[in-house]
Image (cartoon, rainbow, N blue to C red; front, top):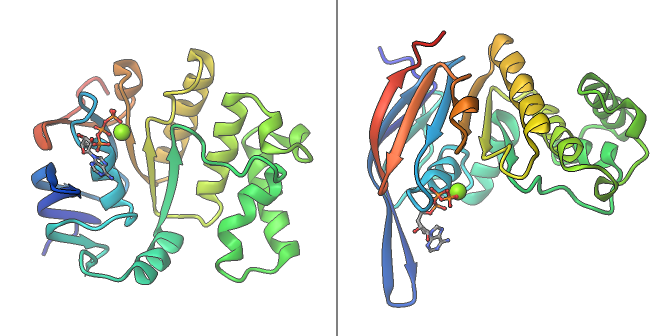
Amino acid sequence: MNNALIQLQNICKTYHTGQISYVALREINLQIKRGEYIAILGPSGSGKSTLMQIIGCLSTPSSGSYILNGAEVSGLSSNELARIRNHTIGFVFQKFNLLPQLNIIDNVALPLVYRGTRETERKRLAQDILTRLGLEHHLKHRANELSGGQQQRVAIARALITDPEIILADEPTGNLDSKSGEEVVKIFAELHQKGKTLIMVTHNYNFAANAKRIVKICDGMITEDVENFSH
Ligand SMILES: Nc1ncnc2c1ncn2[C@@H]1O[C@H](COP(=O)(O)OP(=O)(O)OP(=O)(O)O)[C@@H](O)[C@H]1O
Ligand SMILES: [Mg+2]
């Protein structure tokens, strides 16, 4: 029996813009077990974000099969995908994607609104997790009043508040100075220790070295998939 948490089989993705079609992923086969920590590397335009969006149920493949947690998800509706995202996946993006005018507690609590969690409970959970990430002195601040590194920690808190099994991070350190980037990577290492499944796209080889498995993508294809023996 195959017990992979994430199973991609012959995944292809073609974008159509007017008359032009662009093949962004070609026959991707990838299996990821619970608790793995994977870094995805590859040149700009190679399909990394496209792959992350499919794994994260933000987009669907043009063809192929995606089995997540034992269930085929490639043909699901956007509502069904949204529900799976809310229960299974936490996303961290290069540009943080916070709501700038909301305070950081409300930003972090947002995924729980969609679950119908009561407001007092939402705020308590958001405050707890922000405190764990060292932001206890900034709880009243709006997102746009924080540094990039602090904003990314808020975004990580928002990704974690639903206690998702899978954390997907698409160049999470891309907009950060090196010290803030190291802090983010340290948080990921701790999440890995706690048994979370982590997939991180990065251009930084030092940060990729933290992962236990390295997958390289070029022209929409996996060109390398190796264990990281530096551990
Ligand atoms: N929504 C879209 N519509 C049309 N083409 C797209 C779309 N999204 C991505 N592409 C194209 O698909 C290819 C892969 O894009 P993708 O964003 O996955 O690359 P990437 O590896 O994440 O690059 P980067 O390192 O620059 O973030 C690119 O050529 C891109 O132009
Ligand atoms: Mg990208």
